[in-house]
Image (tube, rainbow, N blue to C red; front, side):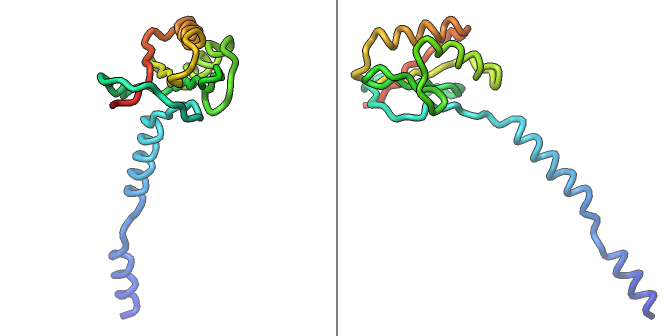
Length: 133
């Protein structure tokens, strides 16, 4: 009798190996397909616009304060170093769009310098962030 009971318990167990394999494969899939957004790290007062569109594939953000400070990847950078920082970010995760979040009181010249640095880094699509009114 004791032998029959042990044999029944062995037959009733469920093999978890295939389920664990599937879980690990799904985990690897989600890690590989995840896109990481490189936020600027500060909030700015964006200008209002009546015709705004969402940019779904942008993952590099550059913020420009009204004082002319440029922020990328949650740290302040010099305007001359924007291109090098973008090239570093592109090596980590390629993209074709950069979003510039300029304060509505930021100087136009600083915004143009940042745009030039982005173009020199090899990105042709530049979006300017605005508030929808």
